[in-house]
Structures are given as C-alpha cells and as structure tokens.
Image (cartoon, rainbow, N blue to C red; front, top):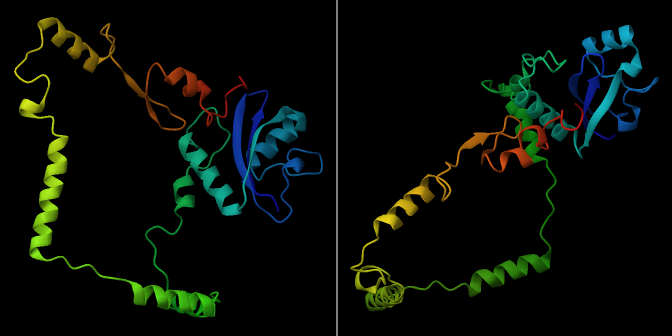
Length: 236
C-alpha cells in the first residue's frame, strides 16, 4: 500500500480536483489509467464519461508513509483552498473540518472506555534488561542533592550580580551617555522603523496558500502564485 494525495486537472474547464487514496491496492501509477483508479468523485466520473479520460491530467502527487498522514494533508489542502466554494475546484465537500476533527464534541461510551483500558493493560511493553535496571539503580544511589546554606546562597547571588554588572551598558557605562541625536539622525531612525531608508513602508501580506505573513518584497518570490502549496503553480 502506498498512501498518496493527488491533484488532477480537467483541461476543458481548467478546474482542479484534490483527493487521496489509501486502500490496500493504492498505487500512484494507477491514477487516471484505463483500468486504474479514477477518483471516488461522482463529478469527476461524470466529466470522464462526457469528455473522456484524456480530458484529465495529473498535476501533482504527494506520497505518504501512512494513510492518516495522507488524509490529514488532503483535509489541509481542502481547508486552505476553501473547498466547496472555490470556483476553481471540482471538490464539492464543505465538511473538511468535520472530517479532520470528526470526534470533536463527542464522548466515548462506557463500553469503548472499557475496551481501551483493556487494550492498554494488555499492551506488550518491552521490559528493561537486567543491565538497564542495574544502571538505573546505580544512578539513583549516586545522585547527589546539593543544599546550599544561607551564606552560600548570598555568595552565589553576589557573584551573579558582579558578572551582570560587567556587561551593564546603562547610565555612565553607556558610550552615548549625556549625548543627543541630531535632528537628521532622528529622521533617519524614524524612517527605518517605518520602512526602508527611503521611507517605503514594509507592508506585510498573507499568502492564501501557506498562510504565512511576509513582507511584500519576499512575497512574489516564494508565495502567492509561486507558493509550493499552490496547486495551480506552473499549470496555467
């Protein structure tokens, strides 16, 4: 079994479909083949019947080690792209959050709790070796608890204060003590806080795909249309 998440594209409408597969026979190479897997979507099946299998192409495939990981990544993509309301997606499922948190707000029954308890009791835990037990006993016996007297605590406190005072840069220890910035320096510092030295503000924007909040100068290079989580990247 090879769990995977796939993104396919319907060429006539240029719409995408996001799905995942984790059955015992799941294999990425079977996706959109004549005798292979053609998704579980009725919408996709209807489009294949109308336009043919060649009307779909595979945009991307993500391989996972477990079916749960594939399922959660698919749910994340559906949530990120607002499945059910996004006009560029064929997905009609609006309950991706419920699917990801299907047990939220529910409680286990007494019978289920009893079974979980029995399962935990019968779980085979790897026992410690005799050598491991001896090492743990030896470490516990040799462990020393340091108890400081009042004088030792005061001495330690004084040493810490002296160490901190060497690195103190306040008051007379500050090289700028008693001086003032010129009006020109103040304007430059003010401009640097607001943005670049030329006064251009550092506007921050959020990427709709990875949800990172970045500055506008970085945004077009790694986010937006060029974001690695954008399924439309390089396909339009």
